[in-house]
Length: 150
Image (cartoon, rainbow, N blue to C red; front, side, top):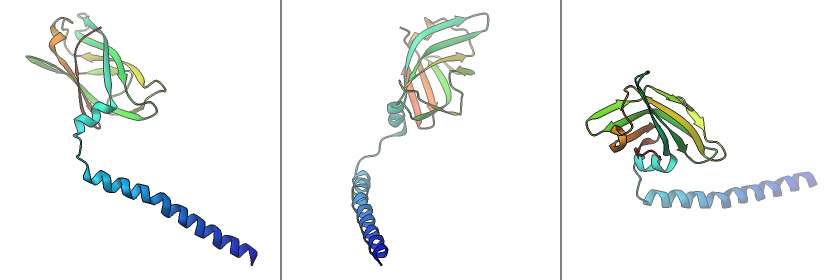
């Protein structure tokens, strides 16, 4: 009989705790429904950044390699489905990426930074692409980064 009373009291306490914990979640959902939605591009920008460290002109391989650091939130996942280099009169899609794989999820490390190298299929002088932008096509939308080597 004593075990039964303790069991009932625990059930009541747990039920009360679940109800109390559910109130902030319901309030947050209701408040979120009233806020303005953010576009996928803006959402993606908060999840991914890119700092260009070097642009390599590889005439022997006929590629332009853009090297740099992806920045993201530590211990979360990310995915890059493709990368485009947009110049004033030319648009190039990347044909290779090292550091992560296209169309596969990866995990951000403790520092939230991953070194990558992106190959574009045409040997362009770094001076030519200084006026361009790099567009990362991610699972959360496109992220646009201006080209400027350090």
